[in-house]
Amino acid sequence: MSTPNEGLSRWERREERLIAHTRILDLDGVKYYHPVRQVEREFVVIRTSDWVNVVAVTKQAELVLVRQFRFGTNDFSLEIPGGIIEAGEDPVVSGLRELREETGYGAAAGRLLAKVHPNPAIQSNWVHFVLVEAVERSHALEWDHDEEIEVEVRPVEEVFALVRSGAITHSLTVAALMHFEGYWRSRPKG
Amino acid sequence: MSTPNEGLSRWERREERLIAHTRILDLDGVKYYHPVRQVEREFVVIRTSDWVNVVAVTKQAELVLVRQFRFGTNDFSLEIPGGIIEAGEDPVVSGLRELREETGYGAAAGRLLAKVHPNPAIQSNWVHFVLVEAVERSHALEWDHDEEIEVEVRPVEEVFALVRSGAITHSLTVAALMHFEGYWRSRPKG
Image (tube, rainbow over all chains, first blue to last red):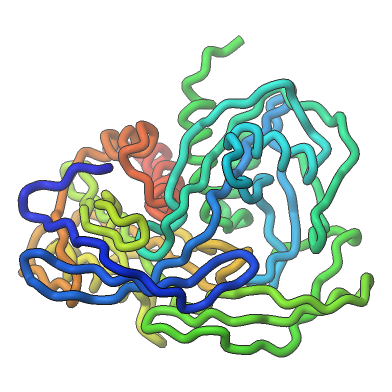
């Protein structure tokens, strides 16, 4: 939890109601009470699983990217691999699984690079960023139903440039690369 | 639009239905048809306004941050200022307005730094990142109903460190700072 100064009030969460249930998320109406203003208001919260995104680096200093059709934007999108963390699953295990299934790339181990909230205003979940180094193509692809993915392997520096030129637009991929760039620029050079 | 290789099919968007309407977003069910597989499937899409976030830099190389209670995570969050772009409003105008209302800081002009999709998988909207330099505290605060905001002004380098230490968790703030860091590190030094 972050630490506010004295001037900010913590709203008290009260009851919530289900507005809509779908395959991938629930839309809830959550009542909050402000202890100083003494008002109660309902806010919309999207409930969904935690997610994982994977920064997968080859020994040749490349990143493994995926291009796929996205239904929210009705367009193709170039991203790092990722998906949903199953209930109780370790984020690193999820990340290695999604990487393998979507791209055929793998490695013996990964580690948690960072985690962020996709949108604290309206979503409760986290997205975990998993770093996997020295990945190699080792598996057949196992796309989920409705997935159709093109794998692109690009030099790390080119990927940073793709973000800054606007060719990569997925905010969670951009946020993962912010964390990764700090690590990458400060790593010991071999 | 991004450019796929030949191997990827563009799903065709068909009819959509409203699943739920709320004050800040609509939840839609959108039917898509895959021209090769010849299947039709419904996907959930969140429809909401475009958003704006503001990277506001003082003459002393500081960034203007806001800390506020967020209802999605039921916790406080440290972020860059931002809000909703009104229909037909220029993103830079929105950004200057949100900056002024939330923090009391302003400047004569801003410019678009970048734009990203908050989540191409399930949302159709953009968030625009507006860069405003040489900001000064000049206005009284005008918080929206339900807003209660603490303004924090921190050195730019410290804000990058706050991201990488995990103290800033809002993915859109992190994505904005990825774009800003590229600009900041490559700017002519005075």
